Length: 172
Image 1: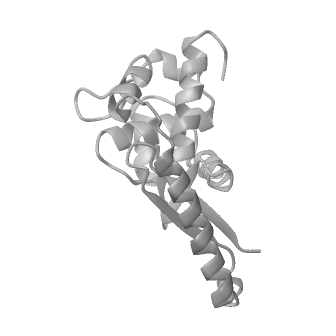
Image 2: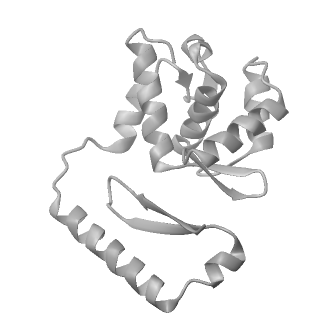
């Protein structure tokens, strides 16, 4: 089965899409299927242009959300006490979000493990990789290379919601 993942940057409304599936399945798609796909994506793009969404600048919103969970002042990720309330998936999402804020769009599993160790968080590499795999399957994270990950737009929204829940007194 071939799936189409459409990603929309909420600030620029720039759309990108990826085809997911086995290589042979993707190659079997007809030119007509690609034409229909491009037309539908074009229609979606036009509808997004018509939609007026009032948002704060993304970086300002993001920094205010994470300030209780991480300190990025030294250009490295220092997880705070509130971060310990997160699940392993939440912790991984927070690390990917912090990395993005620091200008590093992609992070290797080795980098993630080093951050966990530096912050005294006892998740094993095996456990972290298993959770990253789940998060990739769920569309929260994109695997962009061998052991290299990036937070998706959906993942960014998800982790911000998780952090807000904890700030509001709910557990993640």
